[in-house]
Every structure is written in C-alpha cells, then in structure tokens.
Length: 75
Image 1 (cartoon, rainbow, N blue to C red):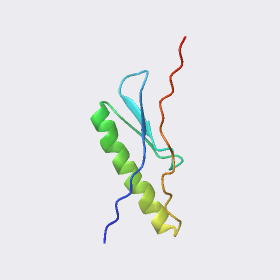
Image 2: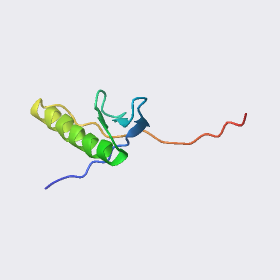
Image 3: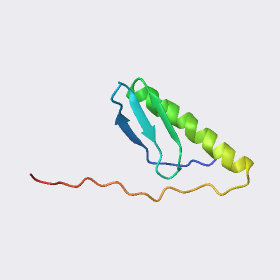
Image 4: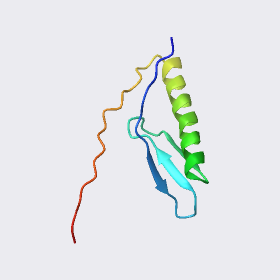
C-alpha cells in the first residue's frame, strides 16, 4: 500500500530568473524551474528519484523533522 511522505521544501528566486528549490531533510535533493509551479513539480520528481535510490540501496528513508518559523526583527 502506498505511503504518503511529506517534506518541507525551500523555494528561492534565482538571480538569473526562475527558482531554485531544495529539501533540507534530503541532503543534495535540489531542483529548479522557470516558474514557481514548475520548480515545485520538478522537486517532486527529484524527491521521488531520491527516495527510489534510497530504497534500491536498502537505506532508510528520512522523515522530515524540520520546523519552519518566521522570526520578526525590527530595524
């Protein structure tokens, strides 16, 4: 039975245009896209490939334990 995994991703605008997106819980899992939606679609593919590779190598699939918070700093 398929299992849903949820990972937080960081999507940053790239200087040359488009977006770079990465998954903190999956070191080295990075992708990009010309648009925000394309970047998210591409990172889904990258996550799938990352997890598939872990499975093929008999490695444990990491759970995402990262917390996201917004911190105010007044200047």
